[in-house]
Each structure stands twice: as C-alpha cells, then as structure tokens.
Image 1 (spheres, rainbow, N blue to C red):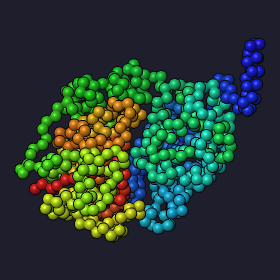
Image 2: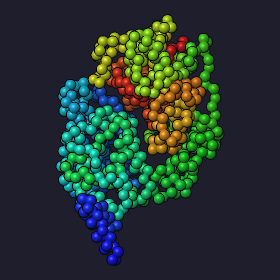
Image 3: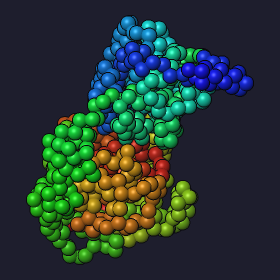
Image 4: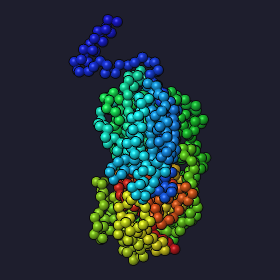
Length: 619
C-alpha cells in the first residue's frame, strides 16, 4: 500500500512538471460496463436514381454496402440499426427529426451514415441528393429538391439529447459540410484501440464528429466505405474498442482523400466515438477456424482461404461457385471446350475473331452476398475484337498524325502500357482515324461543336458533341456493352472474371487485391501490396478467346449510353447522360472487375483508370 501511495505521488508530480492536469490522465475506470450506454446507427443507402428523367446515375453499391454495414454493426458491435433504403427528401428529414426527439442516456452513441449521390452548387455549397432529387437540367430550381449539408449539420448540432454523434458521409462534395467548422486535425486521444476498462474515460466529454469521403467527387464502389467495413470486420478481440482517432488512421489512406472535423468547439482531444467489439466472433460451428459470421459454409468444415468452404476437386474454385464441384476444370469449374472458330479471311494483326450468338446479358455465377442480377437476351453478331487494350504506342501515333497533344501517362511509362487520360470522345476519334488509315468507312460522324448534342443531359460533360453511329459501316469502333460482356464471358459462359475464371488472383489480374478488399470465395489475396498502376498489356494469360485484360488493368469505354438495369439491361438508345465503361482497373476491387459489373461516366471524363479496346464488324 505504501508503495502504491508513493507511486501515485510521483505520478502527480510528473504530471505537474509536464503541464498536464491530473484529470486529463486516461485513468482506467472500474470494469463495470454501465458507462457504455446504448448504441444506435441510422444508415441511409440510396441507389435507384435515374428515374423521372433525372441525370443522376443509378448506383450499384450503396444498398449492398448498407446491408453489410447494418449486419456488422448489429451482430458484432451491438448497435441498434435503422437501415433506410432509397429514401426521398421528406423521409430523410423525417428520420433526422425522429432521432432528434429520441431520449438518450448519458453515454449513448449515435452513428449516422449516408451512402448516395452528393451535389455542389456554383457557390460551392454542398447537398445530399435524395431519391426524388430533381435533375440539374431543371436549372437552379433543382437545388430546392436537394438537402443542404448545412441543414444536416444543424440536425446533428440540435441532437441535444445525444452527447455522442458521429456523422459519416460517403457522397460527392460531402466534405463541404466541414467548410466552416474549424480545425480538422489533432482529434482524440491518439490511441487506435482501447481496452474495455478505459471506455468510460473516453466517453467523458460530448462529441459531435464528422468524417466525409471527399470534398470533390467520390466513387460508387467506394474505397472509403470498403475500408470502414474492413476495419469493423477485422477486429477479432472482444471488448476492444476502436476510437475515432483509430478509425481516421485507416480512412485517411483512402482515395479520394477524406476530411474530418467537429461541429462543436470543445477540446478536440476530448471528443471521441467508440466501436466496441462483442463476443460474437467466438462461435465456429464447424470447427474450421473460420468464425460463423465470416463462414460462407458454416455447417461444413472447409478452407479459410475459401471462406470456410470446400474445394473437393482441387481446381481452385470453391464448391459454392463451382458448376462441376466433383470434376476438375477452370473457368466456372467445368472442363473447358473450344468455343472459337477462325473465319476467312483471318483477323487483322493483334485482333481475334468472336463468333456471335445469343446469350443472357447480366447472368453470372450465383452469389450468396447479393440478389440475382436482371438479365436480358442479347444477340451478338460476328466481329473482330482487339486482343489488347489500345496502348500508348498506338494512341501516340494517332496524336502525332492529327497534331494533338499526347495524353499523360501519370508517370508510369508509355509504350505497351494501355493508354489512359483519354475520354470517350478521344476513343471514338481514334477509331475513325484508324479506319481512315486502312481505307475503311468511318463508324462515327462527329459534330465537334461543344454542346451540340441536345440528347446529352449531363451538365458535367464539357463537350457534349453530337455523335451519329453507323453500325452498318465496317470501320473500327468501340464495343457495345452487350458485345463487351459476351467477349469477357468467353462467348456468354457463366463466369465471374474476364480471364475465364470465377475467382480473382493478383497473380492473374491487375486489380486492388489487398486482404481487406479480397474476401473469399471470389478472390485470393496473393500479393502483399497492390501494384497501384497499370501494367503493359498482355502481362497475364488471355481468356479462351485470346483476349487479354478483360478484367483489371484499365476499365474500358463502351459505345452505349449508361442505362440502369431495371427492366431493360443494355437497352440501346440515343440519349442519356453517361457512357458505359466495363471491366474494372488496377484501382478496382474484386467486385469491380467482374464480367457483369458496369458503371458510367461523363463522356468527357478522363483519369488514370479508363482506356478502351476496339472492334470491327465481320459479315
């Protein structure tokens, strides 16, 4: 006892000498959990945009990610979750008002998470876009149908009954909510994870915190949300709490760069929010070391690398997605047969022949983590298709001949690397140039006067050129979306990836295969670090048609306008707001590289992740 007394005296003197008040020392509280309080989560997941003539592109990932988040928070962290899907403006405001009026305990915590579109006014004010938000084509009036971020901030500030609120926004321009909130750095205790006995100390002071995924554009397949889900899922220590500082230490490394801040002026070091792990992970019904909540086959012992499932025929494809689980085979797990026949005359150099057929676009290997995709019967004609994505060497020749500036290689090198830094209009101009070089009729008739296309409804498209497409011409062109998927699936086979397999490996596809982005049984994390850049075309083996990099490396522009898969997937039309791109890139996770994954961008958009390949009609 005397030694303990002397130690406490020495500790107090040390604190005074170094300018620390004794109450600021993170003294552990008794292990009673009464101070934990209850935990609530209000999650908004908005995806079904694009109706009523909106220019807002439908999103693929928010609902899936919202459901994953709700499951993790409720089963592993004891949150009472309220998941709101495809809410309109009135429903969002009503929910915020409902949570404002709730009665909270002193140490209760409320997480609010938004997944959906965001918008920015000419005055750089930020907005959330509800499912009934009007199109920007409606003029300045459309902003009245959106929800100002200042109103969301006020909702959080006025939740006086709740002392601990964390608002997380995964939307374009959502960082504007922090424009007037003061400093964004030096938050919290500096500890990432704390033990159970320290919880009370960390919830001692009120907190009204916010993290936004981006102050500019964000992505549908969000690294921000993927990283948040990964962090929640990877804590295997019951009773351990993730702090606000710890959460930020993971999220700050994502791209686009997120921002953080507080809505109150309290000492930033005193504000915190905790995610405390419960004992749920301890259950392993089949004894295969994969916890039930992560086990894709919880009643049958299997391999951890396959999510707890078996691979009886040892072909590297786990049984749940193996169409022939007792027979060795690549692709979808069945023995592969020949599906290609050479035409006469033979294909041009660096091109392959694709024999047309009828298939169901959107059809893929059944997955237990998402509902079945809509499908539609498509007819694909015979065509020649380039084996490789168009390279810098090929595109630079076009630039020199037409006296136009060469696109940036982002410091990675040119030559045989796939061309990047080009928009959809650049791609179709290259196709016309190549047709002229070989004396073939051009497919695309372009009016290059800016804003000449009154059927292009995208205000973010800086060109909006009028483009007439003549599919009867035999010149070079981009693939249609139906053609692209048919080729990626080796003639319409039911496979997940464009190399003929249904499991992605970093040794075979250039994509983001970090452990946290690479769950079994659809992906194998075979590299310690992702490459974070393009590779020369043809670096990996081709699929059965001889086509390289149909998944990963760079995503590829397609010819079509982006149409949501509601009732008419891949429906061709001559109006829209975005052009389709397919295949995923070096930046994409396993999900983004799947053969049926699709998205769209403004036709004038260019970055380091999108290139293209070309095709020609064959009669």
